[in-house]
Image (cartoon, rainbow, N blue to C red; front, side):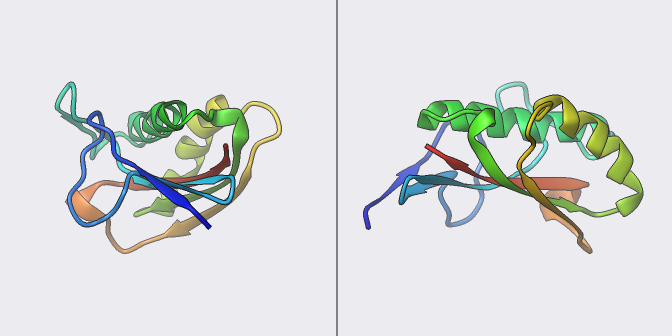
Length: 125
């Protein structure tokens, strides 16, 4: 099976990984943090804005790979505080208003940079 890695300038990357990898007709996105490197914004204190930024990064990355949010089949949300679930979910619904993808949401002890949320996704090409 052939695979294709995608690296994009509008996303930050610290470590050894690809922003996205295509394989077998699927696109696997690495976890997106609430960072806008173009505007030098790092959101650590507003879960709604942080969720919007994570999902906007996913949307932009999918468009870069030739896919879109309507083709997302699985999402994993990592939250450092499950008390933020409802606020995250309100924003999440605006990105997936119809036929939302399968989703897992887990509480984690911490995330890189002290961020409150990280979101990863799998989409079809």
